[in-house]
Length: 248
Image 1 (cartoon, rainbow, N blue to C red):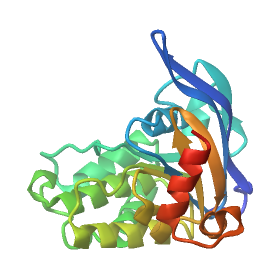
Image 2: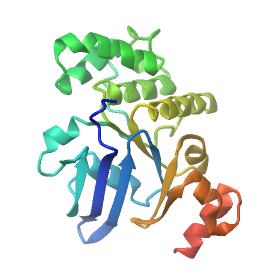
Image 3: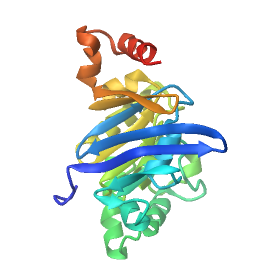
């Protein structure tokens, strides 16, 4: 990550989103720090994906504002999005392409200069464990490798902020372990925010957690702080239940 990257890489204030008459996100405010992995934790339907879509500029909020590395996402979306890498829950893959061609295509979409793409491709493949499958057709790869390709397209341009929506859904236990290790490593060089409904994801990968329920952020703390919720050390699962029931 460049030294010029600010300490706060993402800042959202009072985000709201409605679909028709139904409001699904209510006044969400959060910050993401440089070199941090933040988990957005909540049950399915809590509003996590809608929030991430707004943070990446894929969905306009009805109100509120978002800054990426100090750049207003709504006022200057192209410049702000240059600092974002995004993996939706369904990876945006072209299954008929091979891995190398797809990642080069992703780099070109990001506006990378041709002279820089070769090195960026080699780096993304190495970091995501794709060096042996560069010439393979994406549609022939396992679900775990396809997820790795999805992460590679999100990081190939060296973004300051990486946004991952349910990155391990549908993977087998070995694949989950490998993807979790990869995400933890990404947090050493980028800022990462990921959504999940699994406490084990938060515990194994994240520095900090924000709990979302019914479209609202109801609790935020470090993993250690959550484990010590109410001054009574306990299992994260027990404390998650206590938090969500107390703030229901």
